[in-house]
Amino acid sequence: AQSVTQLDSQVPVFEEAPVELRCNYSSSVSVYLFWYVQYPNQGLQLLLKYLSGSTLVKGINGFEAEFNKSQTSFHLRKPSVHISDTAEYFCAVTRQTGANNLFFGTGTRLTVIP
Amino acid sequence: DAGITQSPRHKVTETGTPVTLRCHQTENHRYMYWYRQDPGHGLRLIHYSYGVKDTDKGEVSDGYSVSRSKTEDFLLTLESATSSQTSVYFCAISVGGSTYEQYFGPGTRLTVT
Image (cartoon, rainbow over the protein chains, first blue to last red):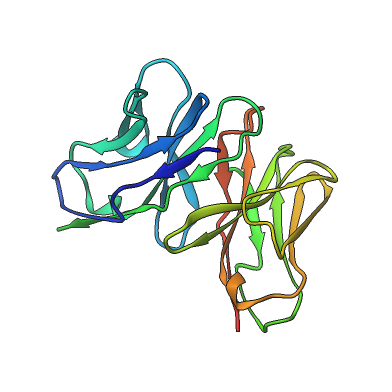
């Protein structure tokens, strides 16, 4: 089975500072990787995805992530955060073939400080 | 907006009572999913459906059943609710002919007292 570890449960950062949210995955087969964002009292919104090709993936709201197969990581980054980025972020993985159920990490709460 | 609605959005019920949550989609997607979200656990898959009357278990299916009699509706039933089933429940669909890119509904907050 696949699993995801999000190393930081909470990340406080000052407005306009850069941020990195860490995600490591475990799988014996090839995978697809995703980042979702959840704003307070809302459902999850797809932020970006890695399916194949370039290991640097750009998503919505200025976020990007880099797939590193050797380190089994998929860290999310933004060069300059805004107050509106305050939310919970989930990393998710699914296998490329067979049953494609998503496995989620436990989430990282990003708090942007004015 | 993937056209997913969930009802009810909030519900408080007593231990031992049956509860049914409804997920409705407007775009005839084949795959639908039910997740629960709990602090410290992220989202965990309860059941999923890959067509009308075709369902399968997920990671945390004990105590839950599902039904899908129409493409647009996916029902999640707690036959006898327990306090451990207090959670936020999310429905999701897969789009684009794949099963991996999922879009989520707004959620149902269920409290079992």
